[in-house]
Image (cartoon, rainbow, N blue to C red; front, side, top):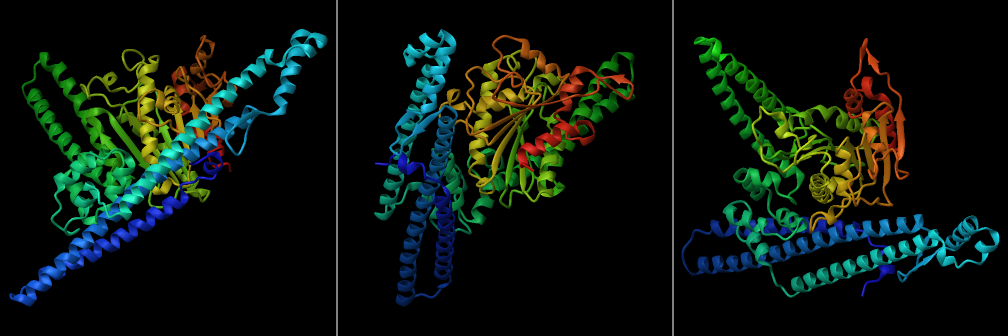
Length: 574
């Protein structure tokens, strides 16, 4: 049985190295199997000797397929184990940070006790409350700080027990998988993936169905990695929409699939654009006063379509963009990328926008994430940044902008609706789970930036397990609030995370500080505040309060240099 003394030293590093090694082994066996297929097809003679040779090669091919299938199962088991060990290691780090902040001690066996300073603080508290004589005699258990310490102790004991249970389950599952592999038992999925030549003859529909049926992200990733490059390309070409959005498939493959999806979407927009332009011309040729409203409506749609075409094209890798990790505009799902995902990153950043943001407005924040990527490169730290807009709601009339807002001022998507914000937070936590599988992110610090109501989404992702079953809480090294609104009810800080809030002093978001029961970052001791002054006028005009609020998310150094410099310092520790 695995205990606390063992899991405190657990890291996924050795499992990740083993996984990479098994991938190389699987590729070599795959290549050997392909050579056997080629050799068999080249025997065209007839007769006993030729038949015997073909039979022997057939046996060797079958053995090769079986070995490849076993290695594929080993890939799957190791990928799952590495992910689980990584989550456990993060939980251990969080438990240790919580213990240190709460004056608790964890023994090698996992038992929890109070540090001596707890009693000293409690006695001092009682003396202050009751006076020297009564305070010195009062039972220590009556001190509020001592009662809180006992509550923290029970909370930590529960965390440790959960971690040990998870560790034993992961250890048992991996051992069972290794026993099955040692016994030569190949899973159905791995058998299907390894059968036949890796260069041709893939049953694309069956393989896509098998990918859909995987129980978790790690199994999807391992099955995908077990396929040859040629097989992966076949699936991307045949199922770009699914591959481009399937959780667990590598970002590199999803970007490639989404380039195809962008081409399709742009083509549809261009067809519609030509159609609308022709209708407008017909009205103009047959002008009458009653047609003015129709012409204005067409003008508005033409403008909207052109914006969409330009924005979507800007994401394509062939046009210089880093690509889209997620591209499903009809359901308001978009995750953009910046930076080099082909090499290890030192910092990973996810930006989460706020109220009134639509998918097209995501383009406005590219300068902010681009600034951080450029600053990282200047400092010699490869930085990969993402713009997160995963709304998961239907696309309505594009002429009515508020229908496309993932967070609005009122209605079901309101920034005052904590249920909606927590659902978006669970979407973000799912993305963080996908991000953790990427090779470039293994040794990176993980940061999230929430602007305005995006702050509510970012903090909600830290408690996602309370919102959506099966989704782990997101864990960050740094959470950064840019004019952040409030944390949703039920939010709890992570003690291994740094929290920073950046804003200008006249920002109207700080009106929320006056509302009772609202957990705002400016009023919380958890957040380090970076508050800067700003002129209320610019170029002779009085700035609207909303302009001051939006400025904190600008990547323009002329407009937002103080906050950008602070944000850069907190992320890169320069």
